Image (tube, rainbow, N blue to C red; front, side, top):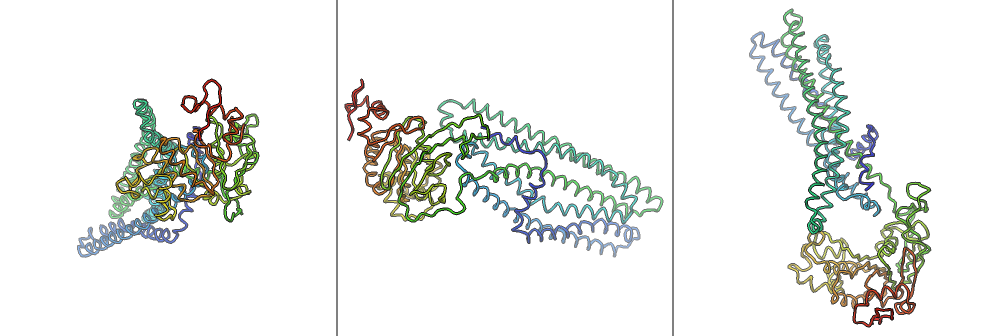
Length: 617
C-alpha cells in the first residue's frame, strides 16, 4: 500500500524541466508545429485589423456620409473574417492531428515500459491506478499540446500587437487602459497557487477511484458472496466524496478568477470611456479612435483570459505529467545485459547454485531501503539442485515454503540476491530475457485468458498453425470440450474466460504451453482444479509430452508426482529432503508425513496411527 500513496510525495514546485521533457514529444512533428505557428501569427495579425477598419469607417466615411467608401470598408471587413476562418481552421486541424499523434506515441511508450517493469512493481501498484496513467493523464497532456503549448504564442502575439497599436494610436489612453494590469497579476498569482494544488488533488483521487473500481468489479463474486455490498458502497462513497471536495476546491478558484477578469476588463473599458470621452469632447481624440480603443480593449483582455485558461491546461498537464514520468522513470530492475549470451539449441539443463532470495532485499543482500538494522525476510535460503536435460523434478512442501519463488527466479521475474540460477550452465542474468522465457512454458494454478478466441488464447500471438493448435488440445484432452462449443476453436472467450469452468481454463493453459513446444515445462499446481477423471487423462498425456523435456512440477497432490525423477521437499525456504517417491517414503520424514496426512482417509491402505501408507502405482 505504500506505493498506492506515492502521489502524496510528488514535488509541489513547478518544474520547468517537466515542461521541456513534454515538449520533446513534439520533435517528430516539427514541420506541423512550425506550420501551425505560422498560421497562429497570421491569425494574430488578422485580429488587429477589425477595430482599425471600424475606426476608418467612422472617422472617414460615417461621419462624412460617404456610403460608397463605407461599402468598401464592409467588404474588406468581410474578407478579413473569411481569411481568419480559413486560417483558424487550418491551425486547429493541424494541431489536433498532431496532438492525436503525440498521444499515440505517449501511450505506446507508457505501455511498452509497463511490459518491461518487474512483477514486483505490479505487486505494489493497483491496476486502476496504472490505467489512469494511460488514459486520463495522457488526455490531460494531449490538451496541453492541442490547446496550450503552441496557441499560447498566438495569444502573446495578439496581446503585444494590440498593445503596440493602442500605444501608436494614443499612448496616454493606452497607459490608462494598462493601469489595471497589476491587479490582473495579483489575481492570477492567487489563482495559480490554488489551482496547482487543486489539480493535483483531483488527479490523485481520480486514480484512487479507478483503482477501487477495478479491484472491486473484478472481485464482484467475492463481494457478493461475503455480503460486502454495503461496506463497499460506503468505502466508495468516501473516496468519491473526497474527489468531489477536490473538484469543489478547483471550482472555487475558477468561480472567483473568471469574474475577476471580467471585472478588470469592465474597469478598463470604463476608464477608456471616461478619459477617451473627454478627449473626444475636447477634440483631442476622434470618435472612431475611441470606438477602436474600446474594441481593442475587449480584444486585449480576451488573450489574457485565454492565457489564463492555457495556464489551467498547463496545470492539469503538469499534474498528470508528474505521474506519467514517475512511471516512465521507474527503473527496469530486470533487463537484458548489454551483451547477452546467446544459447544455440537450448538443452534444458537447470541449475540452482546456493540461491538465497528475499522480496525485501536488493541484489547485494543488504536490506531494502538502506536500513542496516533490518534483516531481509529470506524466502529461499541455500537452494542447491540440478535438473539434467529431459529429467523432471517435483517441488513439494507447505504453503509458503518457497516453491513458486523458485520458478519465478528461473523465469527471471525476480533476480536472486545470493547465488545464481542457470540455464544450460549460463547465469539467467547473462541471457536475453526474451530467449530465456521463450525456452520455458509455465502452467499456473490461476489461469489468465485474454479476450479473443479459443485458438488465439492457445497461440498467444505466435505463428502456430491450426493443426498444431489442435494437436496440443488433443494431447491434453481439451479438444472434446472445445469442439462442443458453438464455434469450436473460433468461439469468443469473454474477459478472463468468464464463460469457461476453472478446469476447462486449466486444460487450455496446458494446450497453450504444449503448442509452444518449450524445452522446459513448469507446472505450478496445474491440476489442482481438475476433476479426478480429467486428471487421470492428463497424467497419461504428460508421460508422452514430458518425454525429452525438462520439467519442474509443483503439486500438493502427491499422487501426481510419483513418477518424477526427483522430489525436493521444501520447508521454510530450505530443501530438507530429496529423492524419489519410494525413497522419501522409506525415510519416514517430512514427505512421509505429508503423504500420510493426504491419504489417511482413503481406502489405499494408508495408516492412520503411524504405519507406512500404501504406495499408489
